[in-house]
Amino acid sequence: MIGITTQFAKSENDPGTSKFFGAPTMPEEWLTDGTVADDEFYFAQFRLAEIAPFDTEHLLPETGFLYFFLAETDGGFRANVRYFDGEPETLVDDFNEGFSLGDDTLADCSASFEETEDAPDGTALLRRDGGEIVLLQYDPLDENKPEYLADTEQVLTFRIAPDDLRAKAFDRVTVTLEDVS
Image 1 (cartoon, one colour):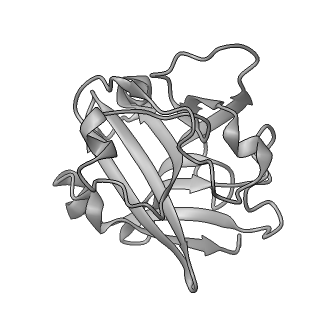
Image 2 (cartoon, one colour; image 1 turned 180 degrees about the horizontal axis):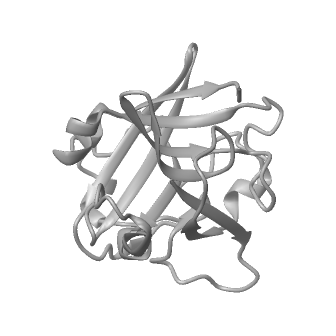
């Protein structure tokens, strides 16, 4: 499992860095071709080269970016996880404007990565859970996180089957809020 430490940006962030919320940097065509739906907000982007040294099983590509978009639904959430193998060129300052996510979600919250013990809580990548892989788990009660979902006392988990991950079938990712056991 790869732990994620976050920190709100104290100055202008590198637009191509790994981060939660704030302003995404993404491919220009995604803004017009339907890759991201109007009801989806930007949750996170990860530069895979920053993760690669800790991905000892080589589950993720070593280059490019992995993006997480979410839509709130009546029954929970819908995930839209996208892989882009390149350097994105468009910074979108106001991507999440119009969503009621909390004021701190408009600021960049940079992410850094480290090896960590497998645990059902904490913010992390690539945790094995039964026959699935928790691609990303987001614990809003960790330090230096946007307050999004902090009132739930649950962890947001993005899950994928190992075969789908190997095939880069990120359209098969599911997302749920889960109690920490």
